Image 1 (cartoon, rainbow over the protein chains, first blue to last red):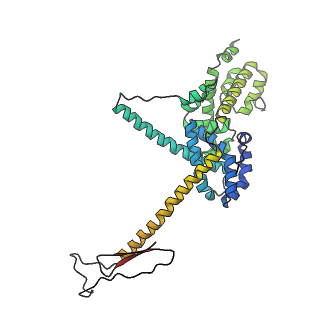
Image 2 (cartoon, helix red, strand yellow):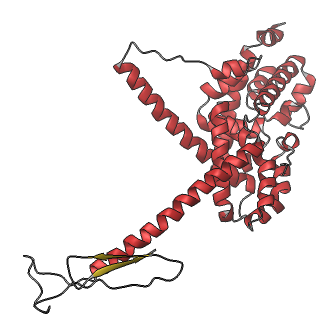
Image 3 (spheres, rainbow over the protein chains, first blue to last red):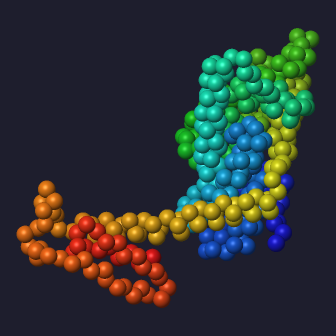
Length: 208
Length: 149
């Protein structure tokens, strides 16, 4: 069966995604395998987009997306529809991403340890983001993923780049709305300062 | 609002304010001030480009393939469970039977209540048609473990 999806329009409107998938969630919870397949079709790109925002690495985003699909299959019946489906799904994605990042950190630690014990051995460190986003926004992507603390990055990504409201994000991240706003302001300041640093002509305009 | 104040606020403002669509003091200032409008416009353009770059990174695994892999993973997990459950049940049954055995005195002598001579007898058990049976003898001639699986 072909999987139907229209992620292009949905990515920019999380509210629309929630409305679109609601009947599918009910049917999939009742064991309808076709509804589950269609549900995945609607959410697949969104899960991947979240995973990319959380991990900053396309390979890791793929792994996380796979994990989330399995978790979705096993846990969908436990979703009680008290929160929005996207909120619930985001939390699963976030947990999977954090688990993967912890695993990767352990692996990196072991690699560093091995390098320390055997200094002759070298590993090639490549900046995959740089090669992937070889565009004029590469510097911004780097600022986003390397300079922003995790919470600030999550909030900035969800609100300013993906269009969720701060209230939704507070629910998704289990934070107070006021904390979300504080993280958002700090993240915006860092990103926007990086933008303006790339355009010194804007600062000059003020002195004309 | 002067430009110094506006620039400071632009760094943290909501996107709607930067789009000059709002009624806030900042939006009004941006509408009227060219340098601040340039700054707000640049931020909007670059943030939009950033959003586009990130949303255009496609998953490398097609959704159909991902679903297939998901089904395989689910099947493997289920298989693991179907193997584990009978083993756990057998272990539980063995545990129950062993804990119900009479406690023998330390030193290994037979309990006083047992007859002087006991001949070991292996019971014959007919299992139900859909199950198999294994009979384990124990050191105690009064106890055998019957495992239906």
